[in-house]
Amino acid sequence: MTLPRWVDELLDDRRYHIEFNGHLTNHVKHAVVALVGLGASEQRVRAYYEQYARLTPYGYGLEPPRAPRHVITEASWAEHLGRRTSYASYCELMERLIQERGMDAVLARYLPRLLPGWVGAFTHATIHLGWALDIDHPWMAVEGLAYMAFSFVSCHPERIAPPPPERPREGRALDSLLRIAGRWEDPGVGLRRWVEEAIGDPETWVATGTHPELARSGLQYRIARMLEVGHPLMYETPAWLDTDELPAVWEQLYHAVTLLYLAQPGDFVLLHLITSLHAMEQIAQRLPPEQHRSVARLFWLGMLGIVFSRADFPQRATLAALGDSFQDAVDIGGPPRQGQDWEHIVARAFEEAEEHNPKLVYVLHRVWKRSGCRALYRVAAGCFTSTPELPKSFEHPPTEE
Image (spheres, rainbow, N blue to C red):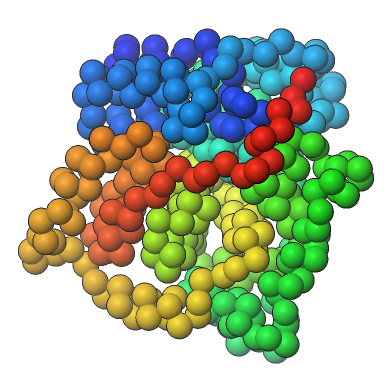
């Protein structure tokens, strides 16, 4: 893909660190990919970039690059996974390797070790890499690989197991969601109470090795603890994930995450399942074919870890009703009501300071087109989110180097 010079210039910008105020992710290049993909003008994209760098929606500006504490080499790169250190040195290593060996060779060599940590940095490292591969930008891909190493938090795929033999075969992702939602609503199972007890007190877990910046984050701490402790429901691979053809598997996953989002429209956490799924699909497409299904399995596992960490799950009745309502609904035969069509949704996205919204629209518009114009993707694309308030833990300064 040949990018316009101004797009390449923005994505090649090296003036800012990948995070700010501790662990908050610099999303500005994700917004560039989304806005360009939706057809925004150069003037609009540049204005967004400059405003975000000055003052993000969280109320902080972007920060300059940080000097690395360690020199990361091919021999030592795995020793520092998830230690949130020496991001710039990871970038230097990955850029050199890509120049020497080519992008696909580096992806095939390093991603099998990095992808189990795809949920790290609340999926944003994976988004950075996947969206870089989507637009085929080498430096942004370097940043994504480095960020995945920097923020690595394993979802422990070694725990994945087949479903119990007595369970009826689930042919759809919706069936799997309904089963899991039913378990959440069963008072005898007590999943909400179990999650809160498993996650526990951040100060306790910092003493046993949890990075203090994750403890400060609130959300990332809960996700990291949930992935570390785990629950059997997270590791039981549904039959459709193992047996469907891969294009159908990706469609099932998009259907699942969109139904979850529609069950709680505008939910900031659930929105990330949609934008990170796009990233994981782009990554899978650049790996050898025999690795594609494992990427989908990792997504399902990490997705459940994220949702479980909330000590909540969308209601079974709501998911079932949405599944029935949108099962055969397609946008063919007449335009939707004014304000709910793609033209208006995209126009709203262009005016958003919260970059997660144009990203949502960008991904779901692509899925809508390839799915035969299924209405649930358009409806979900119009459910914008708001920038969340930062937790009280942000009253303490960042713990970074």
